[in-house]
Figure 1 (cartoon, rainbow, N blue to C red):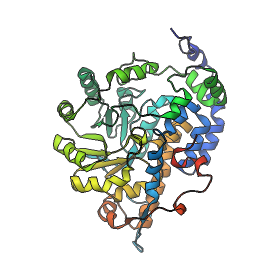
Figure 2: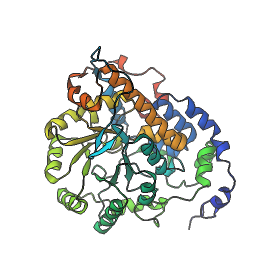
Figure 3: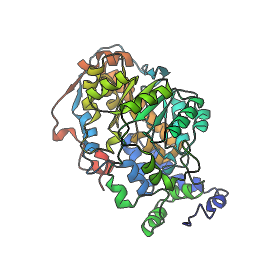
Figure 4: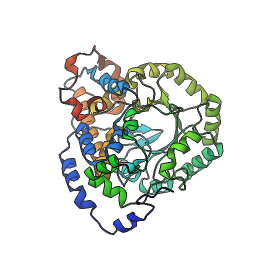
Length: 431
């Protein structure tokens, strides 16, 4: 048995020594000064352990898809109308999975949120409740379904991977239904684990391996380290609270089913029998087949550019998927979103709503609930401004008139940030 601070009970002692506020004071000061998502990224980088930050920040292989996902939005121009008679704030409300929400964007379900900040998924759930939008819970979350249900009474989607064990799947889906989740999203682009080389270089593990390098980095990031050491070790609470976080890799390798196919998807939909999304669509023909199989929502995604390197930017394939499935099938898009203008462009080009991953996780790593709420605040203000200047007063109007307002141009050097952009995370950051 490997001895570590949690097995020695160090957290039981430290939880009675409330030094969190002291260690977090510099982080909170930085958070207050953040004005955009790039600033939140820097706040997260300064607070989180390098191993953890790079896990959040990275893409697959050479991170080409990660950079292209952001570049693609730079190549879309917004051809605005004038004298539209609008005034702020605009009506940003819409429906996601048939449920009323106040914002057309939400935080994507992401695994292991407590590695970024001790509040974990509860912070994201509180932010969703605060802003009146959808909350997404990963099946590899470090907070349980029941606890999330107590934090937000708004619409919720439960994300599921392609597990081998059908009894496990049925058990998790039953818990999600009991927990008030309105929809299910099946992630289909995770049949192999992506090659994330920053993780390899950092010797990424959950929890840390307590190597010399990792301990030195922990000393450099006292706020994150004290959070980690003064709270319970986390488990993957939606699957089995007996599965410790450090067993995740072995569990995933034993449970992920690369052979999962359309017939398995039909079985899954029969077990759920409620609104359902297929998450990981990037081809029109797959979208058509997903509709024919019974999925109610197409989730256009490349897993945050963390899986197949040189997969396309999701905003580039969105129009073709909208054309393929027609106007009545719900489409969610994620990938590359860093600005409210990006959300505006996605809605204009065929998305009914937009998922954000890195932006809210940067906020979480920077400052827990306060940081996630701030990430949503930033994107909400930017989206409101973009829609107003574009001349569209509602989400419905933006979607109806959008294709005539957004035009693609060839990229040029002038489209991209200045020479300090890499330090601010343009293209996902550079090691």
